[in-house]
Length: 280
Image 1 (cartoon, rainbow, N blue to C red):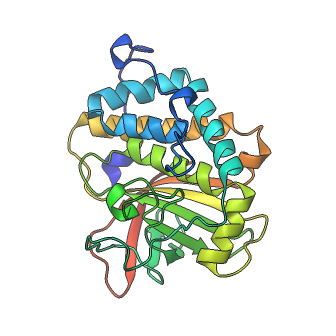
Image 2 (cartoon, rainbow, N blue to C red):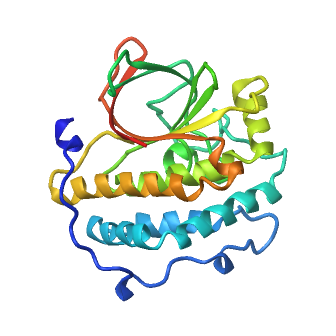
Image 3 (tube, rainbow, N blue to C red):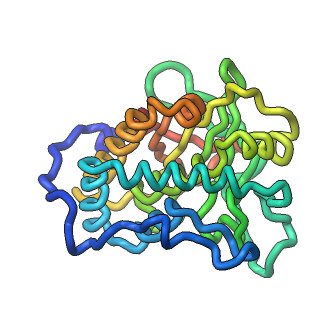
């Protein structure tokens, strides 16, 4: 993991590039009818970035570091849209018999996560859920790559819920995974959604002071300077996001650490080992 921790010189990327086109806007995100799935501005941004190659993601991530206002606007629009649109009928986890596709999930309830790095003893977490969709969708979340791959829980003061997203293909870059994790945070952290998490997933009341940590999980890093640069720029974007929301208590108070972790293949005895690449 040493190669990830070396702080490398930043490539000089220009600001907003005309070739990338304008970012998504809230006007493009309304539902045609109430029966259609909710698609938030931030979700559309995530889907847009999934289609970019690594070099274009580098430019876009660097652009957000210079102009964070668009990213923040879309995050808060999504947060409040989910808050207003919340329905108690929505489910966070699919039924085992939903759909015709066979889904094998690497993360499952009761799986233990051992997070190393930062000195001291490894941090121990327990999965309380595998894949889940903060917003209703037609496909299993493990296949759609839009929701969480795992929800971890760590008791303590304050208790922590870990919203984990993990790389499943070469297209899942650190930058794209961070956007997915922030989307899930925007959709699960409004108070009524926290209540739903407690009722449906934790099977009990979640304390009001619960903190959400975000995991960006890397399983198969690409060789080369572009990927290494994207890991570092993604860290800078996560750090900037936390600074920018510091004055908004409804978001800043429940937001804990944002961490990029390397996930070891396999896992013995019901334990998956992770190594911190960075933490902000």
